[in-house]
Amino acid sequence: MKTKIILYGFVLMLFAGTSCTQLEDQSYRDIIADQFQPTGDDLSALLGSAYVPWRQTFLLWNGVARAQMLPADEDVIPARPNGWVDGGIYKRMHEHKWTSEEDICIQPWERTYVGVNACNRVLYQIESGAINIPENQESVIAELKVLRASYYYILVDLFGNVPLVTQFDVPDGFLPTQTPRKEVYEFIISEITGNIPLLSEKVGGEYYGRFNKWAAYSLLAKMYLNAQQFSNGAYTEWAKCIEACNQVINSNNYILEADQRLVFVTNNENSKEIIMGLAFDETYVTDWNAFDFHLYSLQPTNQATYNFQSSPWGGVCCIPQYINTFDADDERLNGFIKGQQYTTAGNEILCSMGKMSGQPLNYINEVPSIDESEEVHGYRWGKFEYALGITNRLSNDWPLFRYADVLLMKAEALLRNGQSEEAAVVVTQVRERNFTNNASKAIVTGSDLLKGSIYDYGRRDNLVAATHEGGDQITFGRMLDELGWEFTQEGRRRQDMIRFNAFTTQSWFSHDKDADNHCNLYPIPQKQLLSNGNLKQNPGY
Image (cartoon, rainbow, N blue to C red):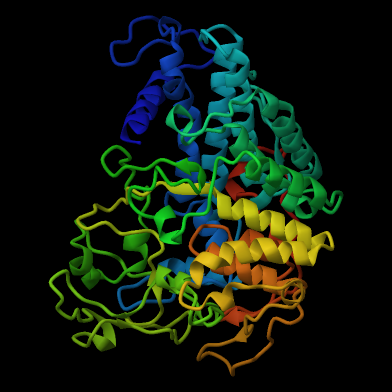
C-alpha cells in the first residue's frame, strides 16, 4: 500500500506541468512526459495521477462523503461547547437549506472534475503518442475510461445535469455546455459496458485500488440500482443490476469477512471483502484532512484514549433515532463509540469544556437539538479502527466497493423485481456474521423485506414538540434499514434515502420534511455559474 501511494505522488509531479502547450526541455524538478517511456512495471504509477482525485474528492474536508452523510438521517453536527456553528453551514445541511455558495457544494464539483480532467489528460497523452504504453495499451485506455465514468457517477448523483467533457486538448476559452442527466447516465453505462471486456480479471497486487473487471461490474451494478433516479425516470434496470452483481459473485474472488470489523482495521489492504479500495497511509498521504474521522467525531480528551498525536475536535455524532433502529444483539453497534471513556492506562476521562466540564466523558444516545449539545451527547463514529498513536490522518484504506455491497445491491434489485424470498436469502447471508450470540435474529424473510422502515421518523429535539411519523409508509423500508445498519459511516446514506423516496419526505431530529424534492440534487455552485454562462441552475435554487 505504501509503495503505491509513493508512486502516485511521483506521477502527480510527472504530469503536473503537462498540457497541450509545448514544454521547453529545461526542467530539473519535473520529468518531461516524452522522456518517460514506461515499462509494464510502471503502469500503476502511470495511472496513479488519475486515481488520486477519487481519494481527495471523497474524503477531504467538505467532500463527497460529507455531502452524502450530513444531510441524511444518520449523522448531525450540533453546536458544541467549542463551536461547530461555523456560520450555520452544518445546520443548513441538516435542515436541507443549503445554497449554491456552500463549500460543501463547491468542493465535490471541483475536485471530481479534477479527476475527470486527469483521466482526459492521461488518455490524451497515450492516444497522441506522448506516452508510449509498451503492452496492453487497449486495457489501460479502457481502465481510464471506466475510471472517468466513476467520476461522472459522483457528478450525476450529486448534481444531475453536468458538463460532459471527454477531451483534454480543448481550445483556449472553451466553456462546456450542460448535458441532460439522462444522457450523462447513458454515457456512464456505455463507457462501463463498452470497456469491461478489455479490463483485467486480476485481483490484488498491482490491481489493488484500480478498476479491474470486478470493480467495474460493481460500479455498473451501482448505476443500474440507481437508474430511475440518475435517468430522471427513463430507465428501470433491476434485472441488469442483478446480472452485474452475479458477475462479481460468480468470479469467486471475494468473500464476506467472518467479522465485519476486519474490513475496517488499519491494515485492511488484504481483506477479501474489499473489491476496490482507496489506499491510505498516514506517512505518504499528507493532506491535512485526508482521512480524519477520529478527529471529526471524538471529543478533545479522547486523545488520551488512543494517544493521538493531535487533539480531536468533537463535532459529528449519530442521530439518536438512527441508533434506536439497531437490534441490541446486532454486533454492528460495536462500530459506535459510546459510554464512559478511558485513557490507555484505564483511567476515567473527564469532559473539558462547557456545562459538564470536569464530569465523566460518558457518551449517551441523546442530543438536545441542532443548536445545543454538550460533550457527552451522541454516540461517536468508530467503525474504522483508530490506531494507537495515529496522526491527524488515518492509515485505513477506504473500501469504495466491497462484497457486502454487491450482495445487498442484488438483494434490493431482487426485492424490487418481485423476488422477495430470494432477496431475503441474500440479506440473511450478510446478517449472519452480525448476530453470533443470537443466530435466529439473523434470519430475514421475504415478508419482512416487504415491510416499511422501523425508523421512528419525526421531530425529536427540544426546539419543538415531538412528533412520531414512523417509517411504515416507506416502500421496502425494511431494506433501507438493512442498508443503514450495514453501511453506517461509509458515505452513502443520502443516495440510499433518495432511492427509497425518504430523503425529502421524512422528518428527523431537527429536520422537517421538505416542501418538494428539489433537494434530491445539490445546486450547481454559484462560482461555476458565474464563470460559465452555458450552465443553468438546478430547479428549486
